[in-house]
Length: 309
Ligand SMILES: C[S@@+](CC[C@H](N)C(=O)[O-])C[C@H]1O[C@@H](n2cnc3c(N)ncnc32)[C@H](O)[C@@H]1O
Image 1 (cartoon, rainbow, N blue to C red):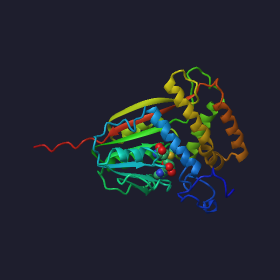
Image 2 (spheres, rainbow, N blue to C red):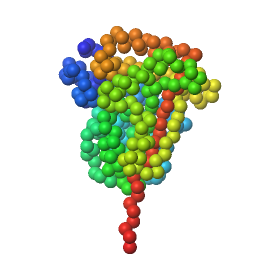
Image 3 (cartoon, rainbow, N blue to C red):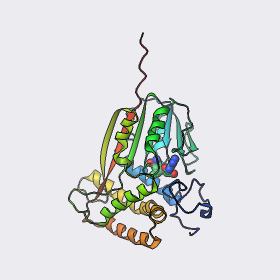
Image 4 (cartoon, helix red, strand yellow):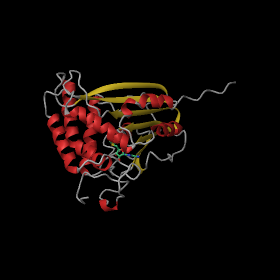
């Protein structure tokens, strides 16, 4: 393994940890994160934040939380690029905690925001019934046991507290059949297969709502969005979204795939490079009218039932 390789996976490591300290062979149990946490990956998370904001027309979240939440948790906060940071600025009443496996958070943040290094797949260390709002975005491929995750979330919400989750599909589609039989179709199949083999599913976009309901969340609402890949839509908003999303893909595909395909699916590195070349060509092909789904799901822990008199 090359020491300077910026696409290799990180295992619960501070930035710059020598790759040689990683355990081999890679398996779902000794690789904690599916992607790298280097500078390029951090820029990519910031770009993702812009994309999500654009998709939600500038909203930070859709969940109807109160104006003055007190305790808020953002699980897998990444660079906290906007979500956590903006949330803390907009809600000075709230004490906001952002957690992540990687220490990639900024140091200049609002005083009511703090970060903790934590694996959300472990038992959560916070007091039960303590959060007004738990936020999750982009944890597809990061969680081995989602039922356990939702249970932990439920346990840590205050009665009446909300959880919102935003997830993206890894399966490009088209309404006019233009991606059928193309590299985009292969991308969807390969990605789902890689997530399954890794033991951390990439299918959560389609499962989140039902799993939240099964975990006991009430008043669950799902809003589905289409994220165009490329500036092919006629609608101005969708065109802009597609333009940013294509950049998001172009900057992201290597980090998304390299570890999963080489270490988990056992592809040769050269095979992955060729595959990515084809994907890059697909991303620039104006004949492909591809999009992928994004979901925003929120629900709440039932409010306490008042004691009978
Ligand atoms: C796709 S990024 C999303 C970051 C952020 N939520 C956002 O939307 O910008 C996924 C993040 O989850 C973190 N992560 C992965 N597995 C995790 C785990 N088991 N516990 C906590 N964080 C995890 C990664 O380090 C990464 O920062």
